[in-house]
Length: 66
Image (cartoon, rainbow, N blue to C red):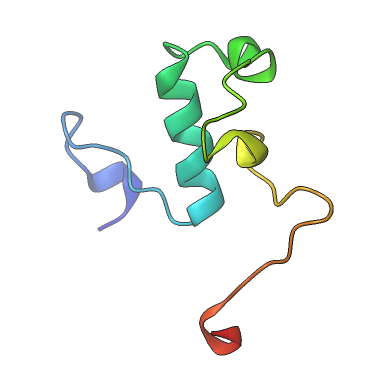
């Protein structure tokens, strides 16, 4: 099903883990992307990933590396 065919009340499908993390951070900050940038919840496990990208110094892991 294409995005244009989805009913307006169905949630948007997030296709990558990083985009899902970014979406969760935006949700946590009540939809304000600027608040995600200013986030002070450093003890949150998603904190390093809040910009939707793998941070420098972190290793990307995929199923083949496990």
